[in-house]
Length: 200
Image (tube, rainbow, N blue to C red; front, top):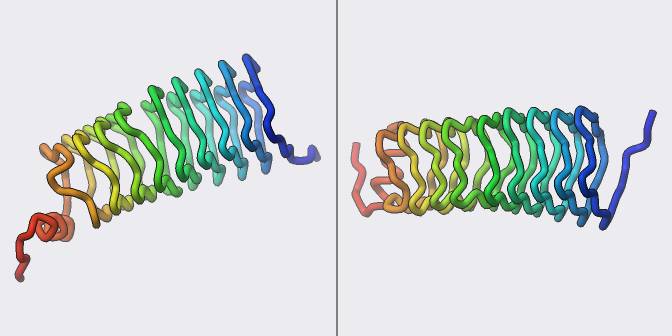
């Protein structure tokens, strides 16, 4: 049985890890540049304060792994899956995130500002104080998420399904709600945020 890696401060450039399985490894303050991580599977792997630039992660599967305080620039997550992963404080810039399947996990303080997230399925994810400003979440599935105090300024939510999602602290004037699906409890929360008195 191969021992888990514990790597700090390394630079990986142009490497091909396609299809590799990682379990329990830890990468801290590492840089990944123009690497092919397509179809890799990770289980309990931690990337902390790592920088990914032009990295291919298409078809990758991640279970209980973490990308904490990372920066991802120009990376592709085409057809990737993240189950119960932790992405606290991670920033995405100009990434390809469609299609992407997210099941639960902690995405608090993540920055997805201006990203194309149309039809993304992020059911059950924790997105407390996430920056989703100017992002396009049209037709996305956000059921059961926690969007408390998230930044939704100019966020497009056309036909997005937000039923069962916590919206406490969200500025109701921020996002574009056109045809977004919400439940009665959420409607009351938004009405109260607008200063209305909700009575039975």
